[in-house]
Length: 476
Image (cartoon, rainbow, N blue to C red):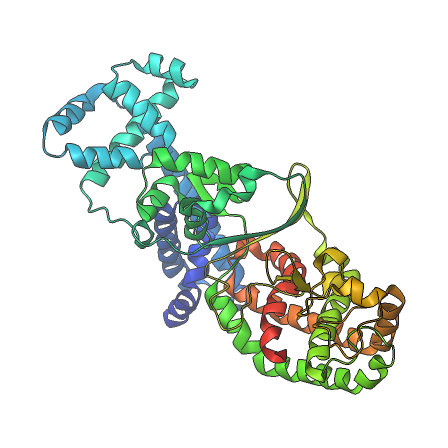
């Protein structure tokens, strides 16, 4: 096979080769070394291939053989490392503590993960033997020697490097945790993201798995303090522990880039679809007014606003019924089921946002104007701009020409309204299906590969809420 064709293949597939290497060895530096060795092996071997139809299979066979050689070389080095004498670098720590480099040494110790840090401090600073450290840590003396050897390598490399904290160390990102749940209330879980650190851990490890050391550098926080936060995120399944000491976020995050692109993608067509729905709804107003509920004399715009929310809820109920396998709730902790996702921006600051949707909207300390339960308004939440209590007006037949601020239905009246709007409810269901399909296809581009099994489930379970925010600007 010609050399230029081989080079073209490598250029087009270098990310795939690196992804293959990263999936095998986890550590990013090791993955880069392995990927380089695979590329070199391909360049050396591929020109000898005579049958070009077998090229792709041949390439990945080369990658597999290179990986096996890489592992054998790693094992050889590991055995050689463990044979070294551990105490030989005691003077290194003593000299570092006496010199001006003590600050750098402390910085590097602060970035060590728990096992390395505790073994190093016990051996070099507390003066314990390998056997005593092993007994204290509940591990074998051989593991103590391994941790100490690796620590010396890490420290020597780190001390010779210019360590730079990540941007999140001085500019924490916005992170909002959204949980739609039912069940036993868990204060720890609900208040987990009242602090900045947990959310920024999840954002940092969302696309790329990171070690505690890497997270510490990104966030400017010592590993000793990072470990408790990571353990808490692991406890609730929001962070996964991977081979090689890596951690990765186990949560779908609606990024600002995704959300903005989704709005741009659907805006024109969604406006058209909702506009057609509202047009069909308007044609039914005269029929609906004849049902005779309180508020039937509201002007068209006010009436359509209330009925539109009814269409949203009823249409979404049909959508959920036909997509039950996608909208089922997860077990999020003991005694509670729900849906979780994250936002990396302030959802209430954008063009398509609202701090409330169809439900209760506070008017004052005593009352709220609401299309409660999207049909029947509870007595305790009734509100009118007039001072005469609504119950008294009804009982004394004083409503007359008074214009209520909202529609109130009896159960039979709401049933008649739903029946009259059955076609529009189906139309709304179709809009939800259309939105869901497009949101899923776009999220598959924006989200990391490890979240692919979450995407359809989360999108289908939450599409009602972002659409509620978006549609507000279409109907007001």
